Length: 349
Image (spheres, helix red, strand yellow):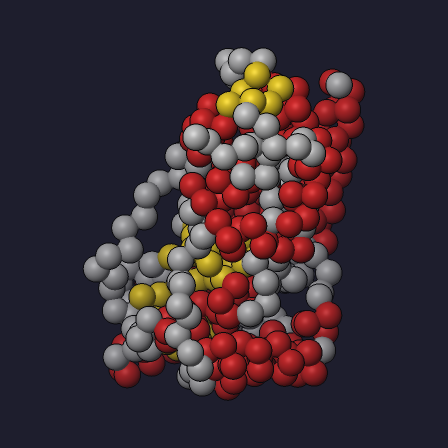
């Protein structure tokens, strides 16, 4: 068993190094922005016509998103039970891509046969290290800086966040701060047009911090509630990327005191624990206030959410569970844990 874990850790380490060195390959969405975005944007636009009936997360959403993770854990625990063996729970969490150090922390001291109540308490506790965030009495404009590697789903997530703001009756403006790639500017501009929100943009290679400054200044002048600014996910070197992000943060503060109010890291859920290395790197550059996990519906690595929150000690604000506008949902540790346990435990009397 130990050799299995050792081999798994070595594989994860190699994956993390590759990710940090290459900063991910471009996705088909970014390679052909106009052609592919038109289809996905029309779906978002259609759903945006009606205000979503349910804005918050629920077990139903997570059940949909975690279907591939469920397939893995049910291979270990195929039948729902009242109590489940310690070793089966341990193997199940490994199959869900939770890091073994986190599993040890969660399982320490539990009996050989574990009830739902016992396991639920331990799993929910893994999210308690993340600080509580007070989102009442937000400044105006409320400025969010979106960071993350190329291909993680930044642009699509920005569009969904903008739609959420509009559905809540708030005004929003976008800033195309990824000036390193022309495709990124074009992609965000296409979304802005379809969602019908203003955007501040410039040409490829121009100063990204100037875009951030102009976006915030425009929001102040026009009394706009929300500012969402995209940033580069890859420059020639990690040092260049770090310097650019630090400059953007500094300039945001000049445009409005206290801005950016949130620096949100977009993590690709299909990468599981490998995404933690990305978050740590960006956190060292500029500090991260919270996480949005995307593409959760396309992975069997749902258990990585435990590791992401626990290791980074950062709140997970939203999870992306599909391509449609309603598929960006607020993250609830209770709903997330319950959706997992519903698959393996019988209903409590």
